[in-house]
Image 1 (cartoon, rainbow, N blue to C red):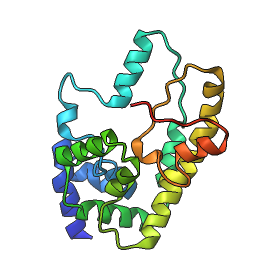
Image 2 (image 1 turned 45 degrees about the horizontal axis):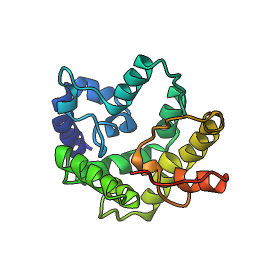
Image 3 (image 1 turned 90 degrees about the vertical axis):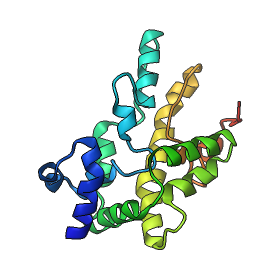
Length: 193
């Protein structure tokens, strides 16, 4: 509605997204600016790069081959294939969340360094998610199905050996998390920090 659009316009103005541009966004596109690891404006300042891009730069500098675990189309299809109602529910949930930006990012890093990878997923979802359908759809589309695809695609790299695989921390824990899926495939999974 109008109220939600106003909230979005307010939040996205920090990224240089105007109301006319926002009006053409599908809900999932706006959602990408509101997630726990969204591209906060500070990381868009000159000289700062996203971790994904940094890892690609280091790999190129060292002459390492880089392989994608998903195609851009697959990443877009995760959201685009979702019903508009579910996209709006996710967007509404993200707008309701109070903690934002630097504090939330630091909390995620703190949990990771404490080896509490499972808590990262809870933090990403928010502590007061009321809709079990929301959680079910989020887990199935955003995590579980993608985790299965990523594990299948990383297998050849792991077989070759000497591979560095980088994924978001929310993909690691859970019954259908990457760590468990790799263990089920016979890989030894061990924490090294």
